[in-house]
Image (cartoon, rainbow over all chains, first blue to last red; front, side, top):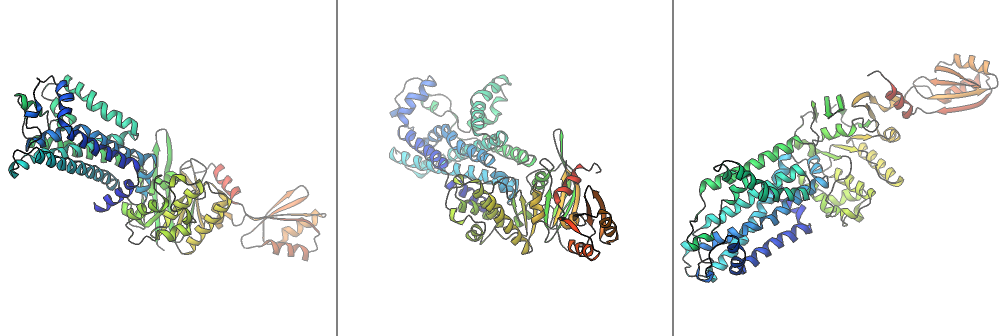
Amino acid sequence: MLKLLRIEYRKQVNHSGFWILLALHLIVLLLISMNINSFLSNATFNINNMPEMDLALKPILQFPDVWQNLTYLAGYFKIILALIVITSVCNEFNYGTARQNTIDGFTRRDWLFSKIGLAKILALCSTSWVFGIGLILGYSHGVSVDLADVFGRMDFVLAYFIELVVYFTYAIFLALVLKRTGLSVILLLAYDFILEPILSWSLPENIGPYLPMNAIDRLNTFPFGKYVGTETLLYVPIPQMAWAIGFGVLFGVISYWVLKRSDL
Amino acid sequence: MQKILSIEGLSKNYPGVKALDGLNLSVQKGDVYGLLGPNGSGKTTTLGIILGVTNATSGTYSWFEQGSGDSLRKRIGALLNKPNFYPYLNGFQNLKIVADIKDLKNPNIAEKLEIAGIAKNANRKFQTYSTGMRQRLALAATLLGDPEVLVLDEPTNGLDPEGIADVRELIKSIANQGITVIMASHLLDEVQKVCSHVAVLKNGQKRYEGHVQSLLSGHDSIEIGSDDLGKLQSVLTAFEGADELKRMEDKFQVKLKHGFKAAELSAFLITNGVDITHFAHNKGNLEQEFLQLLSDRRA
């Protein structure tokens, strides 16, 4: 695995697109976190028609609430990193390097695992970044800095990592099938925001939540309701994590199957 | 002798096309093996399958008598179709990736760049390379790890005359080190100059397999003219090295038996007092044999 990561690193380290998108993702997360109060009052609350409230009085950025709130918001910006994954997969087909890697001795599994490795590294970068920001926000708004509170809801951080890895694996699968960057990105967004919602309305009510994007989203559902008395889940259910991971494995297996059958 | 590659009953169907139809081949250690055929005859499909990028419809192949496992390809240096590299990386960085994939501890990249004549451009990005430079970088990549066998698909494609000469010299010098070379080409001249063995493909089927020399041998022909055609004919008939005698207006065409030289014939004619007005020696030409094989409707 270390060998695959080293090779993937060599492919990315001099690729300007990789650094630009990664930096963009991290900066966006930082800006959002720094302006979380005004962001919430402008965007989320209006959309959800929540009653007016004084956010300053709510423990949004205090331990342990900060973990749930921060990872929920950060989840919206995973698309930027998904672009890196998609570009990286599609480029290998455009350049003919997926073929050359194979000729040089890669198995198709090696190749897929090196891309999943990239997905995991990106997820790890983003998760560490969010974790760091969370610590800073939590301590600077600290009422309780009791370690039990500080690290109280790490399940949301873990769920954020899982969310990213599964989402990127799904992006790899799309890119492998479509082999074109633009098309893959469009379908990625279209499925997430148009196709799956339609599917989920048209299917019986109890099936919708189990569709892949829903499965990822439901790792961390809209958390701010708890401040106005709406019923809100305050932890990540283990079955939900298992279901999301299951989709990740499924996308990986299908990707392998597609790759195995195709002529490069 | 060790078999480097054996192919049995290999077929590949694309929708509506049989690109490869039950091909059998066998390459021995030290061969410089040419795959010759017109465009669309199945050369690249064959190489694609034995290099693991194309899935065969049926049939098997085996490298080094050890089967078709992916890791065996690390012992092969291969250039298929066109040079494929990361455009935003320079030549050296690109070869580092190849070396990593092949698990090479000390890849000696600089040396291979030097041999392929691309060393001075190694620090430029691949996307700035000319066609010839790309081809040279690809050749340098195939040499990494001193492979036991080189697989080259149209290796002189896109090169200028100097580059073509360089690459042919390179292939010859590699072959002289005992490294097996498998080379696809539609250039007869190239196969004739470089290869020891040849398989001729057409429509995914093998039309000929064997030594380049035996494909050519016995096919040297000599044209002889004389003022006294009657005498010429009787002397030629008496020459034991003459295989086939053909009258062509004011001269005769003689095909020489294997092992006879043109000089022997001319000495024989002079000894027998024939006045020679025309003497032309046509070396066996792969092109003629090739066209004959391809037009042949047997198979």
